[in-house]
Image (cartoon, rainbow, N blue to C red; front, side):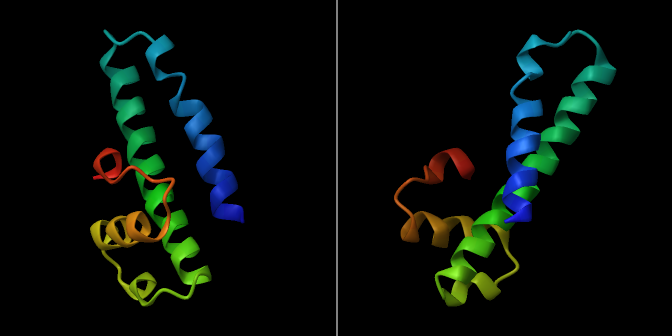
Length: 83
């Protein structure tokens, strides 16, 4: 799954954020951008998983609905963390 590979790669980069100079506004804006990309990839991976499982909710375009449906379908997700 191509999107999952991207998700994993970006997560690895984002995990390095605490090691960066958090006093630098340029660095902070880069971390925020990476977080936004990571969230987008994350809910889209969940959407693909729901589609694979044949769930009708996968047709929804709402990240919130996708996350809630994925939480009900997959026991490895923490809804509070995602929302």
